[in-house]
Amino acid sequence: MTLTHSIAFGTSGYRGIIDETFTRDHVVVITRSIGQWLIDRGHHSVAIGYDPRRGNGCLKEDFPGIAAEVLSDMGLMVCLSKTPVPTPLISWVVKTQGVGGGLVFTASHNPPEYNGLKFNPPPGGPATTDITGAIEKGLGLVGAVYGKRPGQIVFHDWIFGFSEFLSDYVRTLYPDYRPMVVAVDCRYGTAGPIWNRLSDIGFVTIASLLHADPLSNFGGIEPNPTSAVALKDLAESTLSHHSVLGVGHDPDADRHAICDENGSPVLPEIVAAIVLIDWVDQGIAVDGIASTVASSGLLRAICDQLDKHYYETAVGFKYFAPYFEKATTRVIGVESSGGFSVSDYLYEKCGFLPALLIGAIAGRRNVPVSALVEDVWRRVGRFEFRESRFEFLASRRNIVIDALNAQDSIEGQAAPLEINSMDGKKWRWADGSWLLIRLSGTEPIGRIYAESASESRTRELIQAAQDWAVKFK
Image (cartoon, rainbow, N blue to C red; front, top):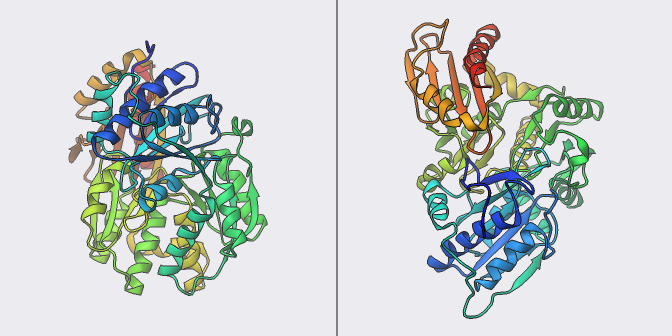
């Protein structure tokens, strides 16, 4: 078997273009290495889920079906979803059903021509770098390995069980929870069946369910829930249907985009701050917040104000695992890109949980979501946070990396107070403003993040980064 493209795991698994850099051969090689990793550690079973992209499904010729056959031939029991399901659902299966790990075929918010493969080992969070490193080392070393006794492939429908788990978790924290009216934009991904089930059990009232049916091409719309068009659709639906809030999802529903009752976007960091404030107010045990170098400084500010821990990591939900594991109470994990979870819920990000928690808090306090947002700003002051991106030639990746590593200052800007190279390069200035440039692990894309006390200053920093990056196109 000869691959025309090398395999390397990025921030969240492996991704590539279907039939080019993501093929049947890629799936076989990666799956065999994962299977060997499971067997070497005494695991006997694995769960497989997938989003609705082309080639995903439970038939033998589908990518997930191919993986199921490979793992079964290696002697593993394979639990294969009958339908497209969210990534957090597979994390729940790993956590609660005793399987040795979970595979999810998804390219997250990427366009439909992409697919990907995530691996979630016990207790259900994204594979850490030491695990993905071991899997990468095993690529191509495992041949057509067959177990002494072939395993079995069993088909599952987990929608009901995961929906019950999700609603039970929220009710445990909010025993007086009242069903909220919500507008949802599924972007033709996997979120629809979960929201419909939550509605069926009376946990929510769905005022509007946009783009609900799973489609392989996402209906020709942008699958990223944070895109300008997606936010506009969600805002209009939320406002016109008088919803408590609106929530949008990416195809595998592990991320969220929330807007308040007026249709105004609510930053993921604001969501985490609202939850932390409410839990402290209620006396719910919480240790603090884990987030990344790309997240807003308001998180550190609110943790300092409430005397809670703030943990900063490289970009990627997998880096929260050590803090989740050692937490004596609860740690909230949040990413600026819309990832959110809590240590006693799942180690994987979940797009449903933050919306339900914010709805529960608004109901408990009997105030609109916009009032909860204003309370955060009142406590910590305004933070103007922006994101942008740039593209570069894939062949020049190493040149871009070397240039970024050597970049100690930004043209036109004062000397930085601090430089952080944990993930990319982050400059912080004496006025509290900061700029981060980091490269995607799977695509020839650079991501830019900036924050300051004023919108004009933040835009100035974004433009400075774009001016630096233009030479690599």
